[in-house]
Image (cartoon, helix red, strand yellow):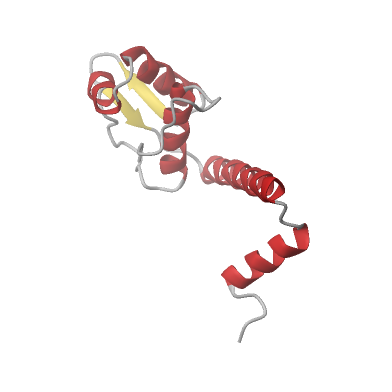
Length: 126
């Protein structure tokens, strides 16, 4: 889940960690009630400062994705379907921005991009 963290990214590591978990929760990969790794365990696994993981967990808690229980850990909360849908829409927007940015850097026209997308999703093919 965290294999693509980029310390050189303009997005801070805590935001990258929170985003990965947010996506997993919105997609249903992490179910309500599931325990997240302890702060120390995840920090050691990712080789980051524990404060980085704490900040990621706090962001998720303030967004309603997890619940932090003193002495017990951090657990996935039940996110209403509209909350999960909002997060998926936010992620889709991010993906489109990235795609358009990369296409612009490569000089790919909108028509070429639309054709490539249509080909990948099978639009217009028998």
